Amino acid sequence: MIRERLARVPGALSIAQGGVLVPLKNIHLPVDGDSRMHTVDLSRPNAAEVNLLLPHALRNRLEDYLAGIRHHAKLVAAGVVIPHRLIMDGPPGTGKTQTARSIAGQLDLPLLTVRCDTLISSLLGQTSRNLRRVFEYAQEFPCVLFLDELDAMATARGSERDVGELQRVVISLLQNIDALPVDTILVAATNHGQLLDYAIWRRFSYRLSMPLPDSQLRQILWKHFLGEYLPEIIDLEDIARRSEGLSGATIEQVCQDAKRTAVLKGETVVDETELFRRLGLTLAFEQPKAVGSTDGEIRWLRAWYPKLFTHRVLAAAYGISQRQVRNAIEGEQHGDTGDKQSQ
Image 1 (tube, helix red, strand yellow):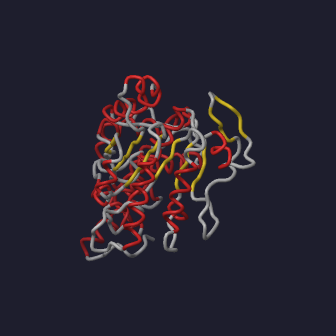
Image 2 (image 1 turned 30 degrees about the vertical axis):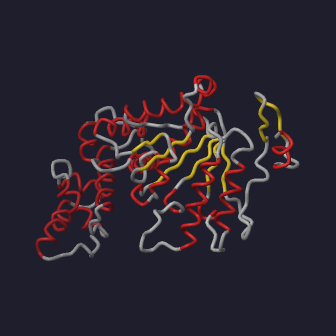
Image 3 (image 1 turned 180 degrees about the vertical axis):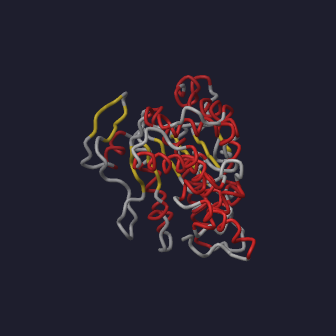
């Protein structure tokens, strides 16, 4: 078995750690047989650098999963070990990738992220061969194998758009998962859990449903992402209420944009009006609303949060007169669709 493992990584520098051979360099990564491009990305997340903010129930579930890995030998001796496989599903931006990075960081293991763009080949049978190489490589040394965007290669069989090659890929994926030793750490994520083949779900012992953040978590996210740029007086309950439906990633982006504006203006904290302005425009784009002009933005912000975005505040925010703000708002009443630019 030792010779077989060594034969798989010829020329790789390695050292013995805890009786396991661990490659020292990112070499000999599996590649697509056609393009010769790597089918996985190898990284080493640092637990201290991964900011994972999840609801309490999800954190408990994740800790349960990590405890099973950390106490693997004890569970094996008791005959109650289960495969270290975790699948996450939920909307984009809810922390699935960050969770995978956090798992690798907390376990102090490298993260192997499968690249679907190179893994999935147009050549008949090549995708299945790529899958086999990736799963074999993941058994070379202790690591976390992360299958992101799992629905790209595990769509339910029997659908109207199903083709023979897609069926073979799903079957190959199932076989490779089944062939993994129970101590191999496999993490998967999908934005479209309803599209996955039912047999895929059965292969994962742990499941995490990643919802959009609730009001309490949104308050934590705003405070965390603003950091030292958080204004001393800001109603976190208000901004959390008005950001309902947004993902953690979107909230982070709004905070980053507001902080960049503060830095460019030489300010030490973000301006509350600017923060709400960016939040309001983000919500408009998410819906989406027609705010392709300054007049359109002014009308939307006024309708979205009239208590904050008074004529005076809007005039200051856009560097125009209150009369121009009034004309922009009244323009909609006179049939203006918001396509013209404010003077």
